Amino acid sequence: MRTFPRTLVVLIALVVVGAACQAGATPTPSPTGQPTGEPTATPTEGPATPNPDDLLAVVKARGKLVVSTDAAYPPQSSLTDGKWEGFDVDVATEIAKRLGVTVEFTAQDWSVITAGSWAGRWDVSVGSMAITTDRSQIFDFSPPYYYTPAQIAASTQSGITDLAGLAGKTTCVGEATTYYTWLTGTLDFGPGAVVTTKPPEGVKTVTRTTDRDCANEWQAGRHEFEGWMSSSTTVEEAIKAGIGMVKVGEPQFYEPLAVAVDKSGPAHGEFMQALDGAIFQMHADGTLSQLSEQWFGIDLTVKIGG
Image (cartoon, rainbow, N blue to C red; front, side, top):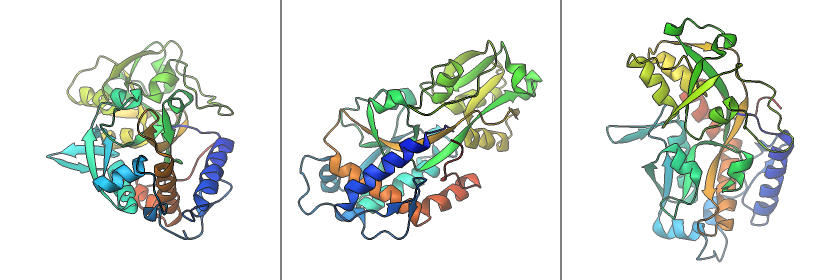
């Protein structure tokens, strides 16, 4: 989906590992931010005397990690007939397992999740959230657990086959997404991250509650817009589902996707150490790669681009 500065990824990894190593809980990351070697301890053990006010102690006492995610964003996450499934669902389930608790999902609109101020309604977002400058003011992030390309598609009915064809046309995106900020010229991944691609000249935007709603409108025969922008994984899933569209142009940027914790919520220093340790271990032991291959048919857990 979105690019992320290599220096910042490395800095995050080094800071996290430096802190976690004091508790002997995480493996050592490589210079690319990907962990190497076998973990020496599990993050489920926690500190000898956990802070009873820290989110980690709260979650362990409850025996359950409450996770917000999108109910209509396949193949990352979807809720059908009361059953959750998808890449993000499996990642969240594995994180909870490594924290020594069960998992409970709550379906929330993306705009509600990204607004922050969760008021304790859930503990984390495992919903393919990209790390951006604005969001970093609201959330603390884990190391990225995968990276995806941002892809534009056009309705087959529009007759558009290349990016230039969307100049002056309308593209649909999910609310509060990086796709919207890219199309409107306000995307900011932070210092050192430069997105060199530009949206089609004069492109207009419309938003829907979630990305996939745009494609669903095409499927229902409504064509109020010519283009759609989402993750390449979601676009490909919609094409496989038989929705009439074609990918136009190459991916416009790649983005780092991480677990988010609300800064305005309970103290979570110890929780972040355990969470980060779990993510590093899941990289190191191949769990994330295996889940990516399972759901996407490709390993998206390694950073692409600058």
